[in-house]
Structures are given as structure tokens and as C-alpha cells.
Amino acid sequence: MSSAPIVVNRPSGTGGRRVTVHSRGRDEILGTAYSDHDLVVFLEGAGIADPEVILDDPEWVEWRGGSAHKFSAT
Image (cartoon, rainbow, N blue to C red):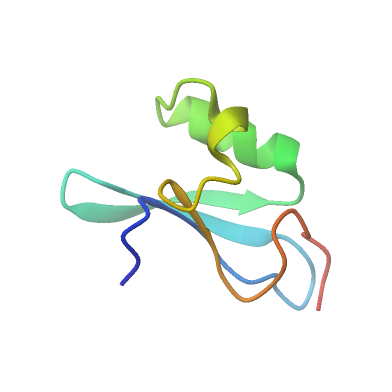
């Protein structure tokens, strides 16, 4: 398990990446992001202040199975 509370999973075959946040002892799926903008909107909705600032911080966000900021199908 990652120590980062936010996980951006690998791109799906049709594009987009599932985003989860670990909060209050459990993982919650925020949705499927198709861009950094989508990701920022999800994180704002989860109550994270200034999410743009943490996207490249590995203590906050783990990008799994693909390059960071790439959302297209593999």
C-alpha cells in the first residue's frame, strides 16, 4: 500500500485514470480523471486546499502505472 493518501491509477484501456483518496481509515474512489483539471476538481471536492500544488509531491500523490499527467489510453 502506498503511503501517499492520493492514488492516481494507471490509464484504462479507454483513457482516464481512477483516482482514490485514503481518508478516515478507508479508500474512497473520487472518479475517473481525463485531465489534470479533472483531478484538481476531484481533490477540491474532497476538501484538499490548493490541489495544483501537490500533484507532483510524492508524499501526497502516487501516480501508478504510467507517467504523471498522462491520461490517454495505454
